[in-house]
Amino acid sequence: MAFTKKLKTMNKLICTLVIVLTITLSSNAQESGKWYTSLEEAAKVSMTTGKPIMANFTGSDWCGWCKKLKKEVFDKAEFKNWANENIVLLDVDFPRRVTQTDELKKQNRELQQMFKVGGYPTIHVFNVVVKDGQLQLDPIKKSGYVAGGPKPFIESISVKN
Image 1: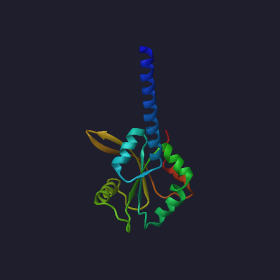
Image 2: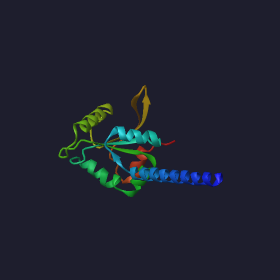
Image 3: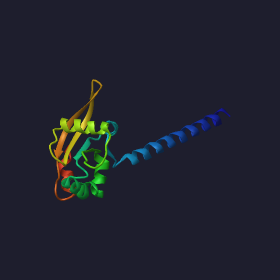
Image 4: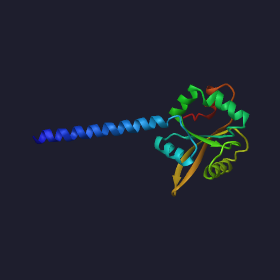
């Protein structure tokens, strides 16, 4: 009788673990390929997954080269598949006709100043580390528009181990 009770308890525990794992995996899958606008959110995902962040400094609604990069690279399956496996995507946008919160504008200006971005599109790949309770950004690579589609662009920002 005691064995049967233990077996039922184990089955409940296993079912609960399966449900939790399923929810965790499906929520991670939903996060893949997502362009974050919040550095804090992107940093959490980066630290959880161990993937660096790729920040796209863009003027999405007015910059011709930014639109070209999006169309030729970011919208392509080859890039999306690579990004899902290798990086966390952060959109640092400076639109002219799209409304943003004051908080988002402030964050984007601070990132622009920190990385000394002077033109668009500019791509920065970096790691996030926490030192003394503060987020620190550790630059890895910098790029911009690269002609030729996803493959040359990926090569320009990939970190060779």
